[in-house]
Image 1 (cartoon, helix red, strand yellow):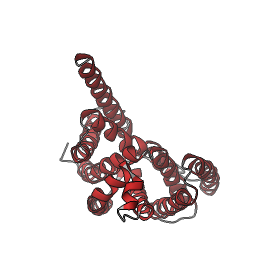
Image 2 (spheres, helix red, strand yellow; image 1 turned 90 degrees about the horizontal axis):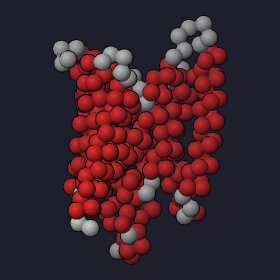
Image 3 (cartoon, one colour; image 1 turned 90 degrees about the vertical axis):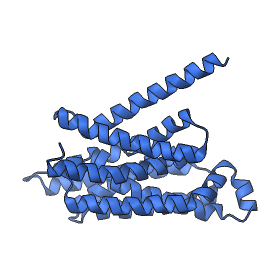
Image 4 (cartoon, one colour; image 1 turned 120 degrees about the vertical axis):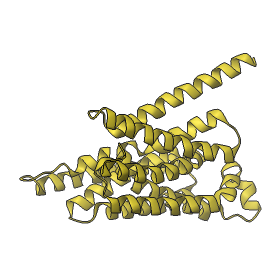
Length: 273
């Protein structure tokens, strides 16, 4: 398996992205911002397809779209204190734009291969080049470092935002910085899982980790580790069974682990009741 360059590139990129996504996902679940992450995943789709439609670098389109959406989401949230309402409105608009850009892209490539949008939706991890893999690792390292730097105040603000603000923590700025990191991670994760399944790579490992421990730092480490195990397992399964899409294999592993962890929680609660 390791003799093939495409597998080495896929494993390298997936390692960095999984660690960053697992860590970011823990905070998303803790802060109750899973819906925002879902919106960002669809923003990633729209940005990627828009880039394809207008002949711009796909990753550039992904990054710009998700970062702008993160800024807008945070601004709306701070201004209105609502949450799901503005995210839902933005979500619908972005999906509509995605459909528009798909139409433009397909129309412009009617006589040639127009499957680029499929890679944005479902990922194309086995098509990652060595340069893209290195970029994914560097970006992921930067995201992980940023999350570790803000981890302590972010944990405080996530548990009790009023108390954090009273202690001088700029909760709005901190939340905005966090969403920016999530946006960057989401734009890179499209290569591995595709836009439709980014949420699974972020939220599911965190949900499993929270089933296994209530300690935040242990949960952060577990979430990142579980995401890594799932991506490597999914890639291995997809290599062994070529007809199995890697993104589906990863999600299947995560779903199995979630069921296992939930079963363990149920057993423990039953024994202590």
